Image (cartoon, rainbow, N blue to C red; front, side, top):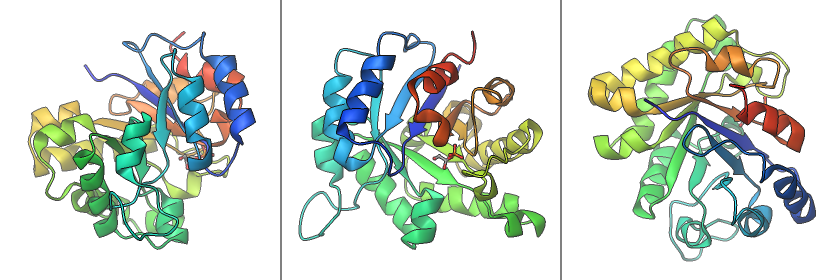
Length: 251
Ligand SMILES: O=C[C@H](O)COP(=O)(O)O
């Protein structure tokens, strides 16, 4: 039985004061962590505040990216070693905004996944296609290639603990959600890809999120799909009320 995981990705929004207000507003109303994991991936500048404010709650702190290096002369980078020391649990890697604006390659995403495991952090690996790629019928091959590259060299035991987020780029921040059927089809394909690369037990353990205009109005239908185990949510995770509705999708 895979534990659902709803993760807010704040992107470059919220400041430390807003972060503390948000955590104070949600922390006593979160679901039992055995039922649903509630995660917030804050900007690096807010992470210390998030971790401090959330310390007596079940809210799980996450980062939005990490360096492939633990330390050294890498100006502007965030060390996975320090993220772990601070109390971060998950780190998003390979988000389409990083692939597009920072030209991150599949190989770098793989290096980052290895750096996270080296530091006992868990990756949330993002994959997904553009509208042009979808219309050209390339979605399944593209997503399988991204998954295979990201997981290269990882053990089955590592893969069982990580999260893959399927985020069709055309649905991110656009208000256009993939239909539940479209999202399920690609998430099932991702699971089959993991089964081919590893085995069915590993594929059955890995958690797959959908991301792209997920909101309180559509979370229930998306989460009802057999291969969707969670959501990676941008805009709708910024407000406390909306985030609480998302993590309580089952009520
Ligand atoms: O990481 C989150 C996704 O990019 C989705 O963003 P969105 O919910 O604002 O569409």
